[in-house]
Length: 149
Image (cartoon, rainbow, N blue to C red; front, side, top):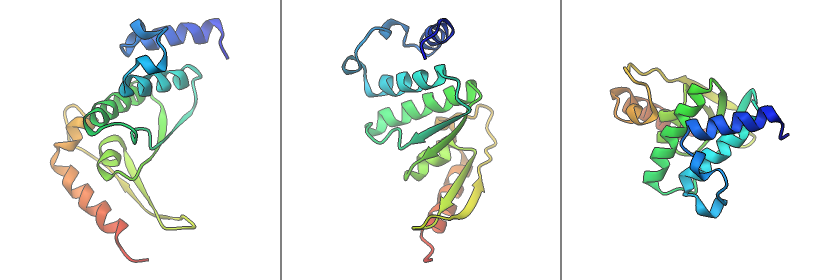
């Protein structure tokens, strides 16, 4: 799918998201966070309607996970993309999502949908982790996940 348009879009995204100098680098030459941003850029070049992020940060250490989660969350918002994040990390879900969908055990059915609303001047994933609403949402989701079915 490499066309003049997708090549130009890739260059723009690499520049905007701080990876321009690594355009020709091999994946082994990039940090885990840089690899995640590069993978997202490769996807965004194709201009999908929906992004599927299936445990995207699971291979990263905690500090990198926080930073990359913040980066990816802001990229998705800036690019105005819809994303479905599959995760078992409650903090990650609350900090990145606008709603959490809780599934039952197999066969999975939707048990509950919880909209996430934060009163923040700058609504970023890292800022959400320090917001007073964060603990309330965490406890609510934790309780819902641990209700015997």
